Length: 454
Image (cartoon, rainbow, N blue to C red; front, side, top):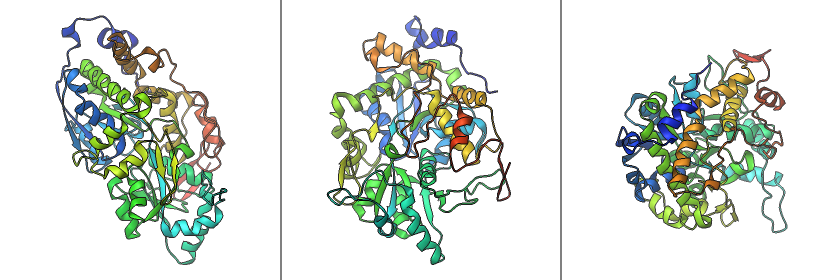
């Protein structure tokens, strides 16, 4: 069993209680935080540009990282104090998949923000299988079942059907797998001896860093990908691909990126973590307030080369509440990027459990685990007590309304029943959920060689 890092008593004393100013002063003032060039790094940029870090006594350097592995290693080895991190990364590191280190999060940066794009060649093969609306436009959501003609065409030509995702435990990997499996396309298993992820796969998934996705698609190395913005809209702007599904279509309103920190850093520097969390909460409030009134300014800020470095026009598509599918097919998607509303920043146990169920479903967690293991592991990484203490301090200081935060939550969202496959997700019963999914490991099944046993 992974132990909980903090007790409520310690949190109240160190982070949320009535203490002197000296007791709450950050233990570490100069911080280096890493990020990947994606629109959902925006809370870091806004906290810096709007002075929220400095308000909290923090002097922050933001450093773009080459890829998610480099970013995670930077946090583990201490070159980075923390980072804009995939929600699955702290969980995977804590259970020892890929890299072993206890990484935690007190703060979720955003909900949603990803899409799946296919090449023009694949789109042309898919399009006849997709219904049209009265205006002749494709009806969304688009099922991965429409990929079947493309899979058959590639197979007849002796070509592998390759798709890109950004990291083995990324939201993008799990969303792409979820979309494929919901349409009856097998995305492949992992095993203890084979982490290619391609055991039994019809679509071959591999890692491509986010900014390289459009170029890799254009080169024909991959025929589709799942990635965050602006790299789906970039494919549309370049005329090389068509987005076919957003994560709002696949499995919406779930933690996307988080603030990833080493557990020992959190234990040793509670005031610093509290200050960081406060600054980032304020940044996300700014990003969503007044019906996204600040998003245009945010687009101009993150378009700078030291942040995302993409054209403002491309960034604007998703950040301001619309999304372009085929060229000219612009649709309203107001919740494509959510930074604070819907209690977005709260580190829900149930969100963490969902990621763990997907790791088990595809063989990254090689053995069956109890429901208690899923929940206890989730709670050892997603630290809701830390978040609540920081949020309460903002309420006490008059910097945020109490209604913005789910104080007293048990950490579980309502049962999700609107995923693309229609399978309900109850985080209190993770094994029953895993067993209800039509494609994937179930019960005590394991992968031995290239076969599912059990």
